[in-house]
Length: 264
Image (cartoon, rainbow, N blue to C red):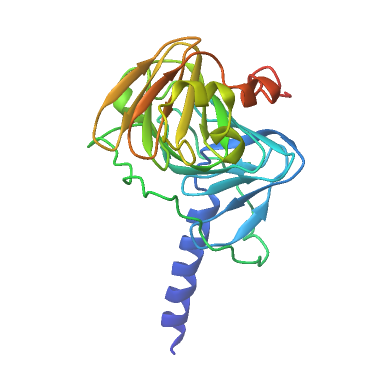
């Protein structure tokens, strides 16, 4: 290989490396209790600490008895419950500057590869509006979160969306929670009271609103609005039921307001 070719290859490699280092972060870890990780699209896993950046395309995982509070570039917050898997599917904020001071200066050390966990029912891939300057598309794969929406989506609601295994959540400017229904949730007395005989809540999506409002859309395209102090479950078969009150499991183990526990 002649010297010019060697220099060209080296320059190309440096350009690619610099592009990765200067990629704008979607947000950062505002607070973490216990253990959390971020899994990149190539399967590499890195441990998270307070102040670490998180990027579009990563899956954030919270460990047992661990909470991960994410603050996004648009001012929004998402607090993950323990044992949650949350994908930052596609985040773009026009007001975000390149995160040169927070992005890793060198590639992370080799790490074990973690096989991606697919939701029981694949949610459609989020697609940004054509020429959209900003959008926030997320996927809740497991567990749950409480969110305070930021600037993205407040002008055009289509710019913000959370997909779960069985439903899609849109916002109307809000503070809300969403949980993928596990075994404890499926046997919750409040949920059982609201469902007809034979209905199965396991794997469904439970939502609740503290302020503002959301809508929940099932696989068939049916949308149901959820107002403050209301709770709803979207079953795996698509049926939606308004719950009479906050589910018992959320009363016993509530999800705090992300802003209240954010340590500056």
